[in-house]
Amino acid sequence: MQLLKITRWLMVASIFYVSSCRSAKVGQASEDFQGFYQRFLTDSSFQMKRVQFPLPGERATVEIQDTAYRWKRADWIMLKDFDLDSTQFKRNLSVTDTLATDEIYTPGAGFYFKMVFEPIQRKWHLVYLVDETL
Image 1: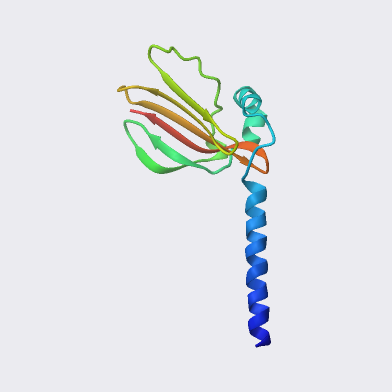
Image 2 (image 1 turned 90 degrees about the vertical axis):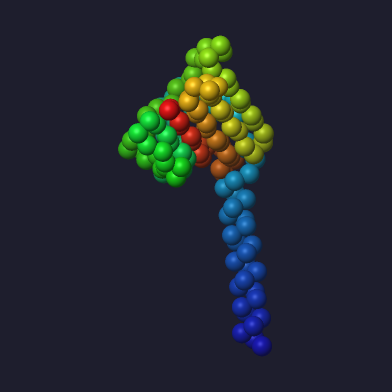
């Protein structure tokens, strides 16, 4: 009987601990996304701090198609602001308190680039990347 009470108490404590850790990591951001994003695309050291390596995502080229790709810190190429020709490229930027997605693509031409950002410990981080150049 005593062992059952202790086991239940440990289970409740474990659930509380895990849920509190998760809520501290992912939730609403305390920083403005637009300010973060501008700095992310112009400050290389800041960008390296805000990418969750190994970064999951998808990568496709003419030679490879990998839907479970992982970008590594050592192979990272800095992301920069995109100067888009709106006659060729389309962009969808969607921002909420808990998720930001930036999609850039060329309709029917085999180019698709997507970045997904989430707040972790109340600061925006890149958590997923899709790079398709077919």
